[in-house]
Amino acid sequence: MAYDDSNIFARILRGEIPCDKVFEDDHVLAFRDINPQAPVHVLVIPKGPYRSWTEFSATASDGEIAALVRAVGKVAADLGVVEQGYRVLSNIGADGGQEVPHLHLHLFGGRRLGRMIAAD
Image (tube, rainbow, N blue to C red; front, side):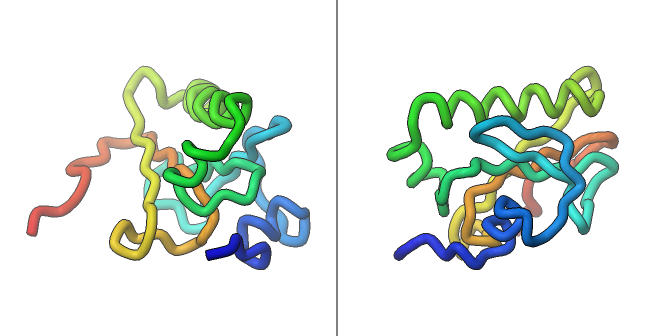
């Protein structure tokens, strides 16, 4: 399946849709979620056209991979959630709950987050 360059994150990356940016470098953009699920809810996305963690980990350059990992740590530190703790979540595919077909990491913090997933 080809990358859909009309998805909302691709449009944000092209500047067609504004975002509340908290971090940007050559490989990564991080911005506040428009429907936050916690006091801190930031999306961290690679700038390359990657749909999933599997695709990203197999085909991204070492620089892109390092930049994404480092961006998560920097954003968490910059937003003051490191000491109390935070969660990083990525939904991949239909069963994983992915809604936008562009790899993205959710960074949540600012309160106790509870269970990771609900028990069946």
